[in-house]
Image 1 (cartoon, protein in one colour):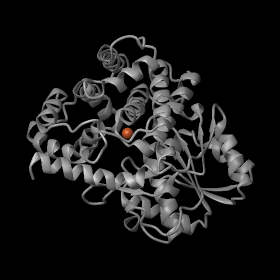
Image 2 (cartoon, rainbow, N blue to C red):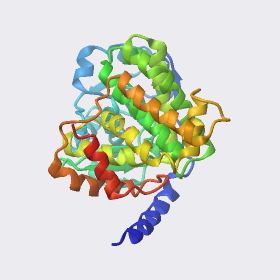
Image 3 (tube, protein in one colour):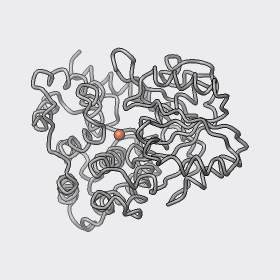
Image 4 (cartoon, rainbow, N blue to C red):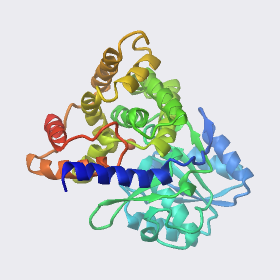
Length: 400
Ligand SMILES: [Fe+2]
């Protein structure tokens, strides 16, 4: 296929995807602030639900972070059954075990409590449980007849915005290739953005996940599927990250900064639900699949490089962000404002301790990574297509 044919094919595929994704989607009812998990618990009780399956991971459960929420649910008259079998990059098996657990425990609803992996697993458990099927039958776009059982979420990291999106990523048991489940009913009925549950998060995870939120905000804003609404969320998320991420990394008990980052993550999630992501995610997903580089860290390393590549194509949009975030005045030329924004991203990365590259990346894998990233990136509404040569140079730049 020639480069021209490939561009035409990518654009065609994008318009097919866009016809599904860019429709207005439901939004969760959101409780925000310290103690908001208790408010969410009360709301779950008022929905009339009687026994909720709580989906989480073992380390989080053992830290006791979940205990106040279990107590609040019981106070609200809701019984709990805790499934703590979620592992990073959850597999179909993890989700299938969860679906079995749901039926065995006779639950009527699902609460995700944890990182993006717990929220992704819980989404598909809620969908599979409603439809009496396993994960394999849910993979793809709107594959199930019935909507998910009542589903709620408490994110314990600030970055993925998964509590706002209708996509869950699940890995194949054997190949560990990632597959997506897309369904509007994966958006929770309600969620709590509670900085108390994020208090103990280590600085390096706060940093990496926070840069995921910034990547969502910027990629949605400069992409070609942006709307007035996604732009609103994207700009708000950018400012919240620039104003609060370093503070949240410096002092994990700074609940104001934590809450602001939780909001940034949520707004980023709302933005990408309709406007999608771009090449930063395309490259980072493949670094994650090949080497297990955490999603946020991969994004953080790649983001400034992609912005350098797109700085002329997206100059006006990057300038908007710079002005909105107080980095310059509207009267300044767009290229100068875009430069300020990109410099600020490099600076933030340094300030919060994001490494410039990874020694996991191997020379012999570069060509396969380029091919996979260019194919995936072609399905996203980036301001322009990145060439294979540009992608190759980028990967060499982040190969430590
Ligand atoms: Fe992301």
